Structures are given as structure tokens and as C-alpha cells.
Image (cartoon, rainbow, N blue to C red):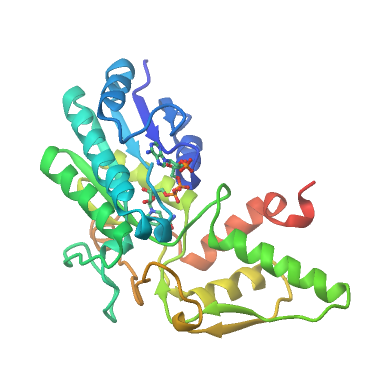
Length: 301
Ligand SMILES: NC(=O)c1ccc[n+]([C@@H]2O[C@H](COP(=O)([O-])OP(=O)(O)OC[C@H]3O[C@@H](n4cnc5c(N)ncnc54)[C@H](OP(=O)(O)O)[C@@H]3O)[C@@H](O)[C@H]2O)c1
């Protein structure tokens, strides 16, 4: 039996690399990234789609640096909005099904209850606006699509909060061992979200495809945390003895504003009885156990 063809964009990124692993068994996969073609180039996208002719496309490529997007709004719109328009148009041309990964940043974060899929987006950042524009292009161009909104993503590859905390914590432990003076790590404690492991997203994507899910779906690990609580959970799981203290957003200013409360509820997945996203602490424990060797700087030669 011939295997269906799957094209994954952003295959060298955090999520894309786990999507490659999760779908390898059942699909004939072409993973592409910026080295293959720029999604901002409509002709290049179209040529690639016609030549490979995928049945299904997982679109994980994006300009994801939230602070850089804020100072490069044209580039952010070019990649995240126009790039997604090019992908959607190419999917329409060859009749491929599209799954697009969006973000909690489409919401303002000015609420005190989890967002559900029918809540009205009101992004405060250029990144959030560009990803929402991508969502709108898809809904305008295609009938058959799935938009999965993610949040606080981490994985074994690339730069993310978990890796940064482990590196900083490890450096602090080393300073302590060497008899140096310890500066407690300051971590923001007034922003709340859903830390979510890429492998969980890949598993959920797989099931969503099998069940022919369409439209917009929230897809995050359940259980909410502040960055400070998340950092504490990381150090506790790894049995690291790191001095850490909570701080406010004002004490840690960033170029792009961050949502205060951008927790997503997987309401549609739950209603359909197919929410397999694990609670975030359980997923974190599995992630740290599986990837300890590559995550701890002491294990890097
Ligand atoms: N990270 C999060 O916390 C988070 C949260 C919510 C939603 N999401 C969404 O989830 C998806 C995956 O995120 P991620 O964290 O895996 O992202 P990532 O690690 O930054 O990976 C994105 C990949 O896309 C590539 N790319 C960037 N511009 C491109 C272009 N013009 N043409 C082709 N490829 C391009 C990047 O290459 P370079 O590295 O060379 O730029 C990178 O390999 C994205 O759509 C993102 O918006 C992420």
C-alpha cells in the first residue's frame, strides 16, 4: 500500500522535528525548512507543493521570536501572515489538507479565566497579530483545515524556557560548588500559561488527523503555571538545588508585551472526547526523563 504524502514546514524547529519523528511510520514525509525554500516566496512554495504533491501539510514554520517580531513588523507579517497565505493557496491548488499551528498570543491575556475557541482574539503583539492574520487567510482560502493553538512550547531541540532554566540553574550550582557568591535566579511570577511539550502536540495532531478534526482547536497541556512555578517544577524534577525568587513583569521588561493570563482550555478536544494532552507536570517529567542526557550541560561534551 502506498503511504500518504506529508509535507512538514519548519522541520528543523522545536515542533517540526518532533512532528517528523511522530509521523515517520505511517507517511511518506518531506520535511522542509528555510534552507529548502522561504515560505515568504509564493512561487517557491507553489513549485515545491506541485513537485511533491502532498496529501497533508503540517505548517509549523514561523518567525517565532516575539521580541524581534515587535521591531520587525513587516518581516513578521511577511513570514507569518503572507507565508501562511502562500501555503494555504498552494494547498488549495493541489487539494491538500492543511494543519496550521497558531498561538495563545492571539488573545490579549487581560482575562481571569481560560480562553476557549469561541473567544474573540485581540492580540497585543506584532507576533500575535501576524499569527492571527495567518489564521484568517487559512479560513478565507480553505474549506478543509485545522488550526491548533499552542502555548509555551518546549522540546528537545532549539531554544526554550526549559533549556534556559537548566543552563542558568546548572551555572548557579557550579558557582556554589566552587565557593562563589550566589545570585538567586529571578523568574516572572505574574504571567500565567500552559507549558506544553512538542511531543504531546505531535501525538494530539496525529489523533486529530485520524478523527478528521477541522476548524480552530486549542491544544495545550492542561494545568496552568506562572514562569516561576514552571521553573520550580523543572528544578524539582531534576533534583537541582537552585536559588530562585519570583519577580514581576516590570522587573523583567521585554520589547514585546506579554499576556498576563493566556491559559487555553482544550474545549473542543474535550467535547469530542479526544483530548490526550497530559497534565503539564506529568508531561514535563516525561520530557526531562527522556532527554536528561542532552539537556544537562554537564553531559554535553
Ligand atoms: N515556541 C512557542 O512557545 C510557541 C507557542 C505557541 C505557538 N507556537 C507556534 O508553533 C509553531 C512551531 O513553533 P516552534 O517553537 O517549533 O518554532 P521554531 O523552533 O522557531 O521553528 C520554526 C522553524 O521555521 C523556520 N522558518 C522561519 N522562517 C521561515 C521562512 N521564512 N521559511 C521557511 N522556514 C522558516 C525556522 O528557521 P530559523 O530557525 O532558521 O528561523 C525554524 O526552523 C510555530 O508556528 C509557532 O508560531 C510556538
